[in-house]
Picture 1 (cartoon, helix red, strand yellow):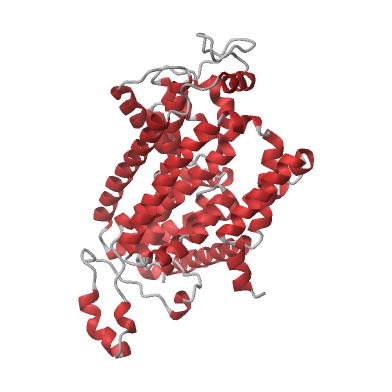
Picture 2 (cartoon, rainbow, N blue to C red):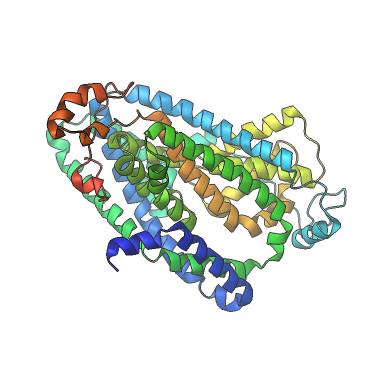
Length: 470
């Protein structure tokens, strides 16, 4: 089997789902042995995280530099702000509607409530919803908006890169890219070549790491189920179902948006999203999916690469639609669990605070992201701390859905910001290149003024990875 066939097999959705199912089966049959396989998943994720920051910094600096020189930066960033806010509110509403209709935390049977009580360590049927622990509960200080802004500025960029602070690295890359745009071309050419080399190397590493993905997925799923067991999953199954339904609705809408904006067939769209879909499920890290998101939009669907390479890292870091819909679902679930009736104003407050919590989660991953549910619960006086362990138990499943929604949803959001790709179907018409030259002026899409069309090379059309500068 050659490398291309092996690569396609490793990213096949059925292979991915089969690896997950087999891992869950082994984890339930032999939990102790399955837990010993977890180190392979840790190594794999660390290898991918190793690539993330160099890729993001090099792509943003180069793309901002070129975007600034070509013009249109202000208009593009204005559209970005509108789409980001609208997308966050939209997915929050979908999550709220799904939980309100399905009511996963209401009217639970006594057996399920007993399981909750065993996990939490307190009786949820009691009117006292506070979780009793030894000693005095530490009063958590809420982060103000001013403190959040200050925390975004990297006092030491090398320290931010060393600790993997994605948000601070993003701020640095944006400011540095704008500054490089003011430097004369003859001086900045050396930096441009270096950034392109880093970008290409990161793309190659990501492709190499896709080959062992089915084996890694098997090990990670087996180790996770061996560690948590089935009881927490049974107790939280209704919440997971509600969150899954909300996520599937958002994914379907996202694919529809990409299909409409790209002008390609649905088959082509689904084929281009196969790699981002598989990598999101495998790694549960949206940042590591940035290279394949860029390739899906630029190489496979034909969107302008210069804009895509700027907007994909920005959207992954700032447009946190996966966490937003999770915060809405989790907050309303806790309210239903404790019998708290919510008014329309309360639901609107949950949506607003979930959007803010989503922006605050920029640069956060894993359990830190889950902990921000307490920020949304605080406005309603709900005791999230007592239910925190329940969400930790099912977070591996929810984390996969959050990442998948973020990756595919952000891909759709980017297509709403950039111009539609040019229709190059006339290149296949009789007449060849001469017909293409004659038809080129009429083929320019509406609204594409000021944008440079990047026509992919024959190698790129064959699936080879592109570069930031081409």
